[in-house]
Image 1 (cartoon, rainbow, N blue to C red):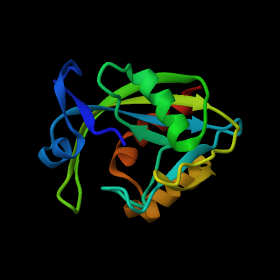
Image 2 (tube, helix red, strand yellow):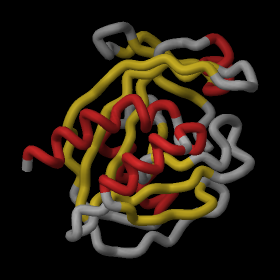
Image 3 (cartoon, rainbow, N blue to C red):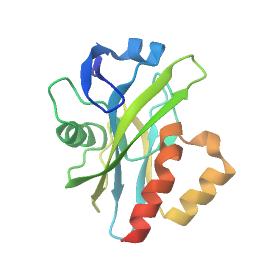
Image 4 (cartoon, rainbow, N blue to C red):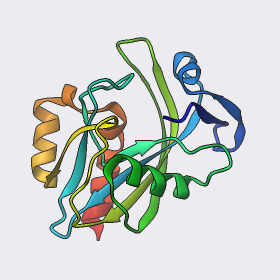
Length: 172
């Protein structure tokens, strides 16, 4: 687990680093990324976060998400973490970024500028059980129904950016 995050200003310019847990305790704005992998059927690969994660444990989310290291490009970090968490490698394309702030039941706060990457792969993940409890492919209609019926089972950042993700994939 990486111990530091890159602090950024409102325009995503780096302004320093901070220990990850401290950044989440203070709600400090930092850089992150989220990866969405689709198979050739157009299904999205979801991961269920490990049950001992420091927040959002056991919740379903996008394929992979994390934070780049200091002096590491966000794209390089996305490729690195996709392999570390899901045992996958594929071409990733930066599609958009968004800023959000979410508070968790344990008092931690995610305040991120989140860079969103898309990729396509039909490979089955080889999950890192320290990071991921489970995975599944799901079509968009079933995903929308699942979130509508049980929103508490999904991470906040995933629900926040999903409409934009769906808009992009439907425009293809």
